[in-house]
Image 1 (cartoon, rainbow, N blue to C red):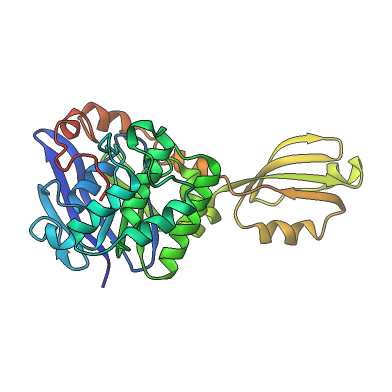
Image 2 (image 1 turned 180 degrees about the horizontal axis):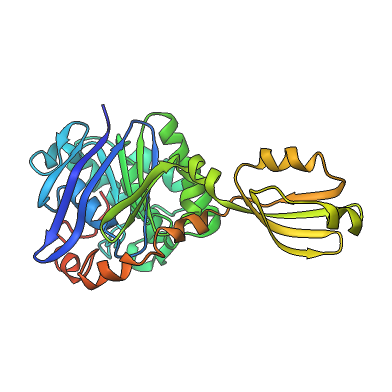
Length: 321
């Protein structure tokens, strides 16, 4: 059974569209990236999943339960970090663990303190004395401490320094290996491509891609530098069709690879080369290609995506759960 199952989900705010006909399936133990720019519809989808918003059409289910009618049951198995995290100014990690344990009717203190050590968070520091990044760490711990079956994280690395981002990634991989599903919403491609197995890209309230990261990498451009043994060999050589040459200078070629690196290496083995460099796949170009289309302006003009309508409908607030 899928942990998340979304079927033709639509959410409208009057004439405005939040999301339109979204379909997603996310399985157990997956780290799933939900990627798109601000206003694309990511937060609307998350709020429907959490039962904060009721769908206008279609359905959303978590662990087989309907996200609206069975929301209290679902929340027992979900850890949530909102993108607009809000915390009581007087609370500490220790007091928040006590409160969470009372609400959830289970002891989460030990797990919370272990996580606090991993994130280098003083358990007795009050929120009003915390930096933005420290508050973010507290929100992450609140989402993780009860060991949920599903983690829904909305821009979780916001405010975290690189070392804490790396620690979060390690923890999420550990949880996924143990069977926890991670739904990771972001507008930053870099953090998604290094962590997630699969990604859905949302634009103006619609899913425009849903595929494995490896599949995206296979289509992404790579920069290539070829250094021939001499200028004569470079002038006589003909590039294969999947290699677009951007510059020729004496015995040096620079270009873009469109396709797998294996094909280039096979071709290169028949050439008289001194050196070859193949860059990493440029997933950013793939990501941008989904937005640089003519209908984006049309969608914006029609009020698509998360506009003022969503911002005026925020039940559930911004606390971590």
